[in-house]
Image (cartoon, rainbow, N blue to C red; front, side, top):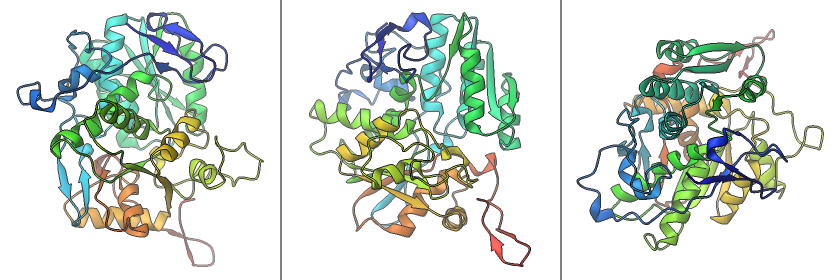
Length: 387
């Protein structure tokens, strides 16, 4: 296996050590891995899952065979307008795009044979880790915030994972999981800190490239909380461009809920990282319908901001009413998507993209959380959004 390295400190660690973060700065790891070129004309007879891109994946690039799979990937592209196409990642085995990263983490854990696997999540990542650990025969514990959608909690438990319900918000949940991750023999299947997850999510772009005949659209619109899909997309773009498989790099357009938009605020301020609380930024601890991207302090913020700027992209934000309207609009088109998963369509509808060819993901199924409720009236009789 290759090594982890810290992009900030240069510290290295063998993957087998189960060290989940840099011991110097406590930041997330990157991976020492150079993907080989994927020949598009060789793909037709390959396995119909994301493992088909074996040259580009760190667990199969040397010819090894992965044994953990639920047939993830290969999700369809469906036009929404003449220029905007949706990729239906809510049709993954656990009904969210997080399966792309979870399958790599479960395969890695299977090879490392830890005493137990732990994860933390607002719902979808935890569900994916639970399902793939079940597939791999691994003992798994998932930490979730107390306010997580009951349907997501039910799904995690149904896969046989132990549940730890944490009072407080998403960041309190992460702190609890990370304390447990420091115990001996524990593999922290973190979709944020472990870079294998990003090498799984990059298959989202490899699939678009394959299905569009060896090209990418002018723009990729991606929802961003911890940035795992965007950073995976950036990896794939760099690999495809570096191997001469695409001629230009698409712009990455990152979408956040206006109620919790620390990255969008930092981008517009010209900052290299999210600004600290009390440093002139708004309070980003409000509630939002887009709970899956409501991350006030994303650990990979620097990398996210760098990736967006490197492609000439930008950040867009959407309001609660725009999210609510986008969910109903997609449902009326036959696509039932959870409220976090509609953020990109809400952004395209609200801001437009000047007729550029665009692909956006629909990341999670509506069955996970149901339709967003109408704004509740306040004491004056006026309506208010859940912020």
